[in-house]
Length: 129
Image (cartoon, rainbow, N blue to C red; front, side, top):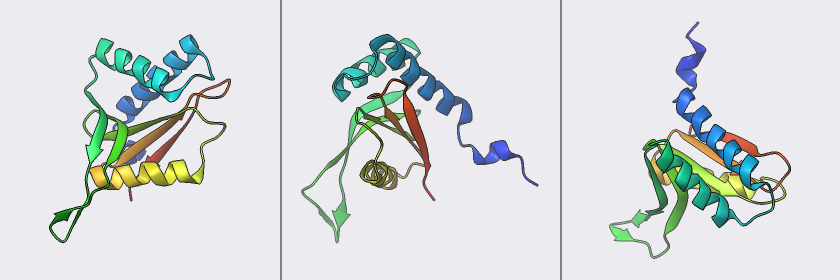
């Protein structure tokens, strides 16, 4: 049987991202707008020297033509982990689909949705299969 760590892509990086989300949530608490949490996370990524891109733009090409609609992932962390920040009652299937869409466009193996709205931070880790 293969080592289970083989299947947990960038395990330490995932834990670090979620840990920083928890730190932001602990200090700011629930109930703020998403932009506030994104701004705080950007500070944490800089302070911890974690490579990231914020509001990364993605285009779709169809038959050699770039389609007019663009997509923007909240963060790409460590070059290939999508992080979507939410401040909603609960993570919905639409949020999952949105994150999977970004993962497909960015060709990334892992996505994380972090929801800051509730008393405790909730998060989901998605795998691009």
